[in-house]
Length: 400
Image (cartoon, rainbow, N blue to C red):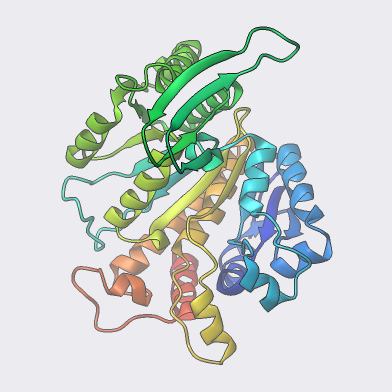
């Protein structure tokens, strides 16, 4: 008899090959076992274009209302995609829209499989990355300098007041200059979201910056993070969670020797780079989940990878594909387990853990998609096609 999920979850459909595996996962692994109210939003490229992207904003508001969402991978269109899909314009990234609407922070967590060995021998537990996805070089202003002259930072207070000027460099010849910014509210939201996530995962928090060099910019991150940690001290102590601040280079060195089991909070550029390093180190983006957490505890789960365009084109030709669905399955289990935790329904959480266990046992038993077969030890003699893997998980789940 299906298990009842008490409250709704926001479901956001997506694009290309991930849209196809999304339906398989829902039809074969979720709906046969759960009675669940899914508030459905189609974030596929065509529907976003038809609604002038209003559907993305509607989905964001629904996550605010219900507290939990699960999202399929989506296209962020460039000029080529505009032509391919006959779009009205290059619509913005749905992830960026949702992240902005929730004021959220993105956390990535690798999925550990025993026969997919990590590239770093000491890594035996997940290393979770929290990336402050606002500001810094991603919203910079920059200028190529073509000759001698002075570059300065000028801050002019609103409503009058004396402008403040800081020299950057007295150029004697050509060069380049860049200005960056961040906001206190965004940094505080980042710290609060990291605390929320660490409490949910029951994991220690590391934060690294370069305050010895950037005494004000990086130093402000350090101080705000410390203030929010102090505010949450009682909750963190009750959960047995420790906080460590390190210089970013020290954090990198320590990560390479650590066993894992921590949330590594990173400034924007650091998080961009280190999340890919950790994903590669643990095996594959196909074994990496992503969750967006707002400061007030709203969660949106998805796979860390994209829409697997190359496989989709093969699928359209009628050719077989071997697309890894693990991260998408874990997006579903992450969202449903979070719903179960909020609702106080341990049987819902237990179902998710059981499904995750079956997925891991299926891979460890030698049934896996082509990308994992290439890095597994021992390497299997063959690989499963897209639907074959999901069917093997469904069979294992029915028997568990």
